[in-house]
Image 1: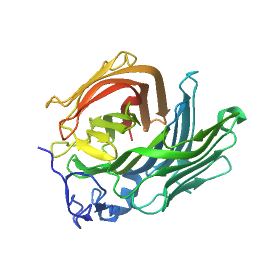
Image 2: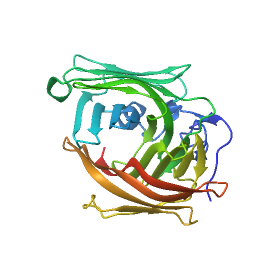
Image 3: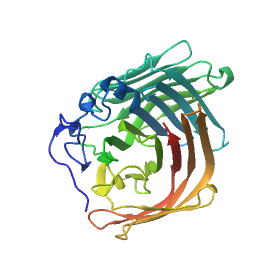
Image 4: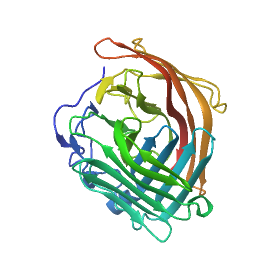
Length: 344
């Protein structure tokens, strides 16, 4: 059974326990991390909290992503882009001791995220029109540079996949994922400049807050695109982290509405990531094959801190069934699927 949250409230009780556990179509809970109680010495808690805003944009030509993250003991700023035609992938990142200079909002519904130093500037701001992504990184890709000024339209009625789950006895994960946000603006990568149009470009947000176990593992799959009839379609599938007995984050997104799925099974070969991945659910509402065409491998090794992600870009084929019973046929939908192992 999946527990849907309907009532606003705090994320954490004064005792540090989760006030509600489950999933919601909108971000209803105030992320009051000041109530966390997982260490006896409370000043140490900040060093174990994870907070990030990860934006992704699909254009007909490329994938673009920018992230501002504060992992407690260090900040992580990274930008990467993949050209679908040439296969060229380039990524650069900055590790910021103790997250100095990083600003992240308390909640996903208000406030801005920001980082700037002599190398790069990233601003994620909320406006009445939507979510604005502004990136300036002049030295990116050996001085070719990357610049972005993108608006993701996000009307209040647009639903998102929100999940609140415990991790072990004292830790937790609060996450919001928004798919299929119409994107407009400009993106320059070196000498190539794209003008983004909302009828052919879509963006997404992965907004995460929580306290994880030191050794962590998860799978995540996501896509945002269009059906042949012009409707927006998206996927958000995830597993491997925390106690998902009350709720998973698995969903079909159709025209800005969440169609909740049960626990989706990942069928792939760890270590041989270019082989097909398959996804299915126990109710027969999802049957997808994912065929990768690009492996983005990102490894961070700082001794006691280690992260290895294999983010595969590819195409989804198969079907998903809406809440109303409509069988949505998916053909060649570009997205990604990943395996992530971390000590953090």
